[in-house]
Length: 335
Ligand code: SAM
Image (cartoon, rainbow, N blue to C red; front, side, top):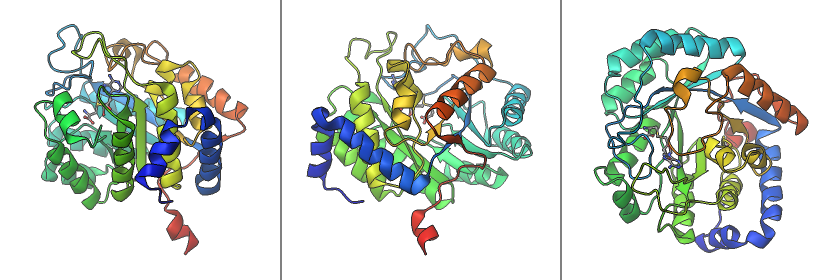
């Protein structure tokens, strides 16, 4: 559905009526993507990063982080365990760790593909040739948040990076036929509701297949330690408006939402979300992938977090998706 910038700002600012907004987004979700919740097994395979984003706990200059990377064998083994647990999508996320060359990653992707899963990559900015090689090796989806469309804010927060380049990467990924996931953080220092409305319009124009929207949570060992961070309420409202604007896409209930409230992901699933990405990284590494403090599930086992989540989903009267959970465009079904 198209909304004007003014209408979006009005919805984002109306905290008194947010329950109505959530109900509306939940109805749109049910009508367009149904009651299935797709679970994706998330492997955080390296916290080594060449970038220095001011908000991020694994930024290059944070010397307090214990750095790790999984070996090729560990990564493939973790993916196999995920597939054995029933996950039909494996999400491979990391910092921008160049140890993982295209050749190495293609080997890993081809090996994981044998487990009959869809593969989502979330490894940041790479060249066209690398994106092409990953796609040819079997990667199906790519997740890369634009973070904000306010270029001035982006460059303030990611000083050595280029907004334009990140945007061009998103276009390359799309052109190569990946399902494209993008998204933003809500509550960044200096971000306005108008700016969030621009972000939502940008994501709609880009015709993304997946939108990840999460609150910014200040990390104590970053330059943004003293900032106030985003509220769960505004993040949920932003996500709900996204659902209304892009009715048939996949929208995850993000870990950052759960980190602000013990029931944050369940609240999100009742306000437009239809995807959850439980962490299946081995426990010994989990606490080191600390993008922000209090990250939900950091001390849980993969099997435990999956079964507790499954129970919560059943309690909501929803079902767990049994397929790959790809984005199915409503316009294609209706034709
Ligand atoms: N390197 C890849 C990339 O750039 O897309 C993937 C890893 S990156 C750490 C994943 C996401 O974490 C970012 O896109 C950002 O939105 C989110 N993130 C990082 N620091 C955060 C914070 N302090 N609060 C909330 N989300 C954060």
